[in-house]
Length: 234
Image (cartoon, rainbow, N blue to C red):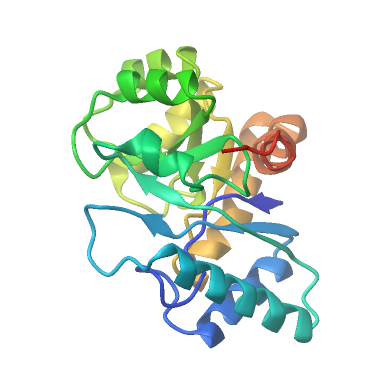
């Protein structure tokens, strides 16, 4: 499996607090069949205690080195989860994408936004938009998500909601999106070991409900295409 959305990088947001905690989560990820993982710290003007980019890069390199020294076989890449805000395009242009690709992971749940306009602006600027955990965004219903997907957005659902481990509304929406073939990517949004474990449970759920082809597409094939996409040039 490939996990495109995690908060494993230590001491930069509300995820892992120490490098030892980061390593514990990475080891668990490898043990459940994840071979590639993207660290996506929050980039936000709406949250406190978000680290500057140079700190994120320094800790990313340190964690990669520690993982190599301890024999992990994981491919570890750097990305970002960007909260929607007034200067979203400018922020993403400054390098806050998935592994230097033209795919941006955007969280629209922090405030009510004109998501269609944001998607249009980003796509017009050369970016593809991955909506982070849309099943959690309370002001977007199923028909809104259907429209946004047909406007070009990718939908990334969190594994814990497919596994039935989150809040009831989000679990229900995630499973409806799966039933209607609306999901593009499943990722953990892991802040801890417990959430990371939900990837295995979610894969099993998708496998049971939709079969191996769909499970592989959501957990492996589409994430791989995103990581292999054209590198964004400023």
